Image: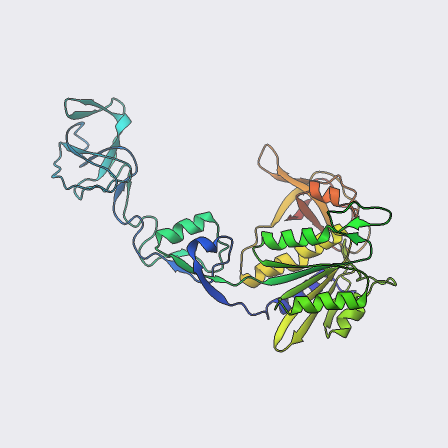
Length: 402
């Protein structure tokens, strides 16, 4: 049996050998993709000095508090005005500032009377008030978006501002998912006798979709070598990068996946990791015709399956794409936990903030590997390291956000 650290290192080494290619897509189709290039500003942002307020543009003087209004400028409708020390031009938010103006007085800070404005009592006027300077957001040629960014709507916005109608993103990994077991039935059927609905397929596909990778549903297979091999073969024909199976990976009579993986030429990297839940996890590599596919045999227990995906697959996909992970957070434990063995435990918890803004985590779950209902109520996994025993209230623990 291998330690979690050793197992994860092996997995990442194989992930790093996957070939990532870039493809150009329309900007709006890049949402939730991973940027494959740095994006630079092609113009200054903003491209000219403009008003941050509705008000009046003036030449600043600490001795003047009354100005004659000589015209108006709205956004996108600039007109030139000769502005002297006692003149002002009405200006709307976003309007271009005349060259000889260096302050904007908000409209609520003045009184108006017969074409003139008067500074209200108590209002302090400062030079460069309420002016957004040319290039203060981004200067022409400055990097606006960093390669490996997971693209969100705010990144689309800056891409559009930089004139990027098309953008280079990394291709999505294709990940096949197959559930095995005589006990499994489609979720549209009602379980009877010893049958259960196949939830793992939905868990894994939703996790893959959440990462904006391409999930390929290979369906369900009975505990039958011929049927399982056929479904795996069909999946591999779809040029998948990763195959994930669930079930049949332990040591029982009907745990067939070891023999099947061996028969199709999978090179085993490890089987069983010193973790809880999810110990009977298999990882290997299949190479055919210069195409490498990473093979994960995950346990059939729903929580074990879920945990294994987060700790071995999600985190290594993020590393492969160079995406900064936002999933790991330290928090203060709010109750004692029981841990007697030397495994690395991934315990379900609820992470939140207290009134002082401190991150805290609570766990009142049984931690059963078959209890999917408890998993649905949790929002994180608390990492309890191998050497750690019975963590106490007040200790810090690492939390992996679900």
